[in-house]
Length: 312
Length: 264
Image (cartoon, rainbow over all chains, first blue to last red; front, side, top):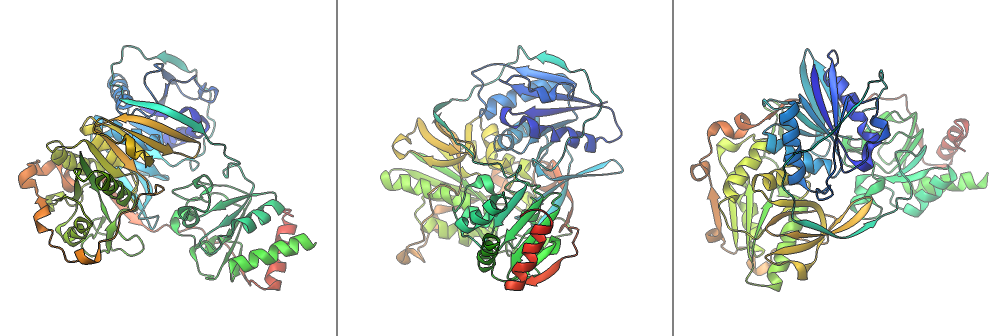
């Protein structure tokens, strides 16, 4: 029987279900008991009947950004249960807490995993490196649990049979508190979530006219997304970035304008029925996975296509 | 005030060589540059030194000796000291081993604050800053976009962390480790023309394992807890694409396609 602990952050409960699928791929033919750790939050309903054990800790002084404190909690919980694997979602906080925990447990850690290969019991955790130019298969050699942060949106939870979830409130733990205070907090409104869009009009270095991208997106009842090049220029919010360092998207239609499509970008495209790419280079990597490749200037084409749709 | 900047030189990701046999980067042959996020940490530290010339800034990095010219260039911008942690035993260290090595040096030196970047453009694991903080028992915040200059004292700092969904201002007690991002406005200035060939050798120290005294088994590939088993460039399923030009006929084909599939 394998024991796997998954860390649940309040704002990412649904996506954390993907970690259950990771568990299944790690131990395909074995019985697995899944534990979820939930700090300062109600148990999300999506975990009921899915995880075997729901570990909760309520202490308003232990704050979500407290890497030291949370690492202490993990260490003690691991001591109690001796997990075979500890999984995090690669959220901004998850990617901070995971390395602290790994260091405290003296175990290896792989960041931002996008696939798992399991050949004859040799588990290899796959992740892109060097700006997505290389995919690396990494194994954990230490004696500690297998630890990884998992890129969100790649692993899809498939409902298995219902389990009866046991609730355990963690008590008598001792941990440090960070000497950090929140002075001010402002929530930002996100106009739309590109992970939920059915049509995405995506701009790259070769097409940075955001207004025009928006025009086409509106005509197609879709949204605008962008490649890292455009986000790095500060032209649009990182919230709409597609790719390994951005989001994984699955619209029905993806129109890529002036996007070269390095591995890091293509990695963010999953199960998309129709891809149209417009590029001056018809051999750009993204073009090879497209249904239609338009060879030419992306902005010029965008302008013409908008005109055509508006005319009719 | 004593600031330590822990930084990393990274291969230019558009132009680097990789050893596919032992799965490590050939750092000696690659064009190296200062990691962009780390450059912001250096930029902020210099800004503080301008405000208060008493500020002492030490730049710490782990790299092969071939990085020395780059480190000298950074010293010429106006830092007080640079420490290169370098030993052939350290080659191939994963993030765990790297954090242990850096900690072994940092634990014995003086600082009020450690600055670093958040992400690196090569490995992009973001492990090392969190792990150093854990080892040194320091509080840590990352993805910092702004540090209020007036608030930056020996005892605390006020910093702003922007994420997709929120903007949070924290007050953090120092010493602590603060990791900046390249979305911040801090930049590393260029070397002034008159300083281009400035002799900075007295400010540069190279620290090897002779000084740090770590067990050879605990560093390098041997001391790593992760191992790269394979590397490959990913192949994607290609589609039966049609190639059209961007003229009117191309527009027509795309338009018809969108219409047939029900998007218009």
